[in-house]
Image 1: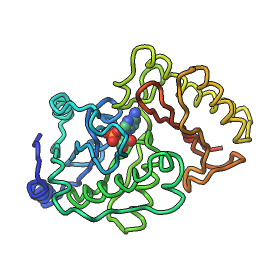
Image 2: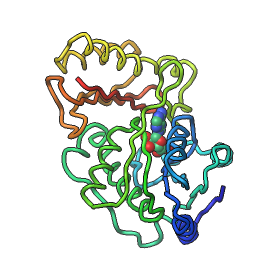
Image 3: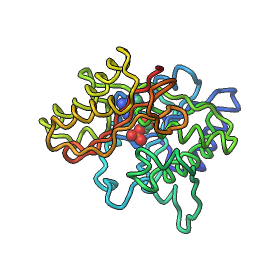
Image 4: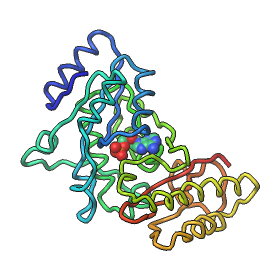
Length: 282
Ligand code: AMP
């Protein structure tokens, strides 16, 4: 595996691979890799001849009071994991390489899609995401790029951006990878104390219970949301940011459950703010 830190070198390596007729798969990450990330890498390896994984903790997608400096990092461990999966390139640029002095250009997906769910509690977050993903796409020129459904809104925003800006690649959404007990894997789970780790299970449990209720015929959004909120409130120190049910494609709130729906939540469990979701066809 080549570890590359500059855009120039990355471009030249990808160009050579393409010259040999190889298809290029790309998995952007912020590192501290877990099996959820690795499942994306496995999809990319399966579909493509040449796989690039990036690790970059992108400052522009963190708000002022968020965990940019504390965000967990382990490049050595990550490198080992990626080498074991036979990844071709790890792109690991510096902040200066990505945002050199004088940097002033941003990509912003406007409207409802970035104003709801995480967009409303993390202003500017998706502008940072759209900008860095655009930059990475321009650097890697992948045929296929892999994103986790764990960040469902991110997938929708990126799909919208790719359509709107006529970007020439496929976005491949990949299923949420969970711990055996149901907790959605996340680099931020490392912040959880032992007790919080146990308590955090209410998030996935509340979603699975909601799924059951919908399968049994419940169609009123508010009733499902109330059920989820009640379950989460059994953990008295958990702070709910949002619990919403939206149309999975437009991210518009819905009152009656039908079609492709997304049940999404964000909850602070101790230090970390955790997100989880479930997508269902009703
Ligand atoms: P991050 O490093 O958190 O920016 O995540 C990098 C990519 O991995 C994003 O596309 C995430 O949606 C995806 N990802 C993170 N956690 C999971 C998970 N538990 N299951 C599937 N994909 C995930």
